[in-house]
Length: 485
Ligand SMILES: *Cc1c(COP(=O)(O)O)cnc(C)c1O
Image 1 (spheres, rainbow, N blue to C red):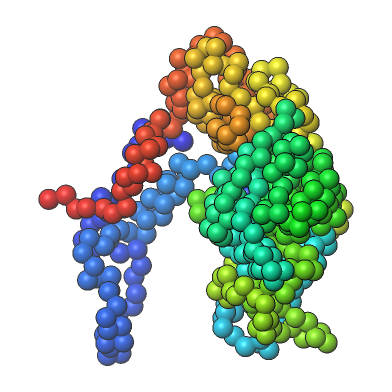
Image 2 (image 1 turned 90 degrees about the vertical axis):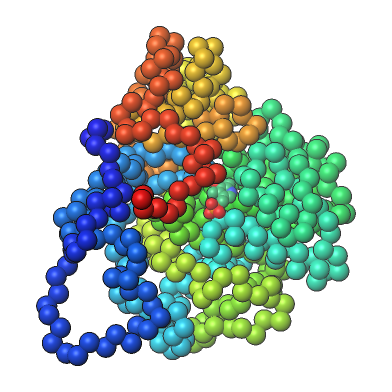
């Protein structure tokens, strides 16, 4: 990486008359009114004009200032930033898929419908649920859809109820989703092993409670081993169990939420089943339900009759559509490719390797970094900066210093119940070699904290800019280039 060169904005290198492409002279009469009302390039004030070399180098240099999962380990806890096999990209970009029109008649897109139905079937098998909808566009959208389904099912029973119980270790989207659905959120405290405290749950589980939203394994990377008992407590009072399945990476092929008493759940395809994500890229948060909730699923539902696929809109109980067309179809294609390529044994190995890798990191670093919860990890482990704080070094300093070692920082300061958290999730796609590099970097940083903390306070040292004002960047983004007079 060349640190010294500041990459100018594309507008700054613009020079009037430059073009990246040269077209032959027009040999038919010009017909400008075809695009009447559409702003044309030549008419847009300040539209950048650059050569092909300039545009190629500009974007290539920008891309090199970035870190991506194709460059190295990206251990962002709770995000499951796994490597995405290129074959999945090739297949999802296949012209037969990419070129098909979302409004095409069912008869013309039988293959697409088959892909959707096949993935629904695979997810039912993996999660132990009775049906899935692939419409939700992300995990949080899946949560909202799931909560709407719970409300609809409880209304059909005669009472939608008032509250939703959520553990204090939950992802922030959980309380938001319940709240948007008109429920008040009641927090359940975690016990010293980082799991739901059964006595607190029992006390909070009244006839007014619609559901418990539980993440399993939770955001501490700890499996809720009392999950069956938890489901019994909730069901005994007529409530439903929602499972945030964004951490499904730890469970695939080993246990099934449906067998543990879960009534509704979502899976993040863009985490567990291989889709590049981050930076706001497309996601998919399919929602799985047990039989009682099937009548309320979003329309259309894909049905198979005698080898033909059709869209069923005639569902009187439906909560309606939650997303245009078929959700994010290209993510669905990648997920199906990943599952079919791996097969049942490989799907189980996702979880086996994800858990093995996280525990390898946990064990290797437990002498150097503080662990608040001693419970064994599933797919991620959560350290804190407690030991480094003694030398005035925080989790931010550690995260920033990792960049100098060529590693993406882990998730910081989440979950909230671990002060100064460093949440590390290696995923199943990392090799021993890359994980060892990460461990070595973390150990070197722990040593620097003891011996030379100043180097950490000023990190990163190898990037074009070092510490950014993240608050200003979020609050006052510069989204428009203004030509200086
Ligand atoms: C990522 C995640 C979500 C939210 O998923 P999005 O696709 O980002 O909306 C919800 N819960 C947990 C536990 C997660 O890790």
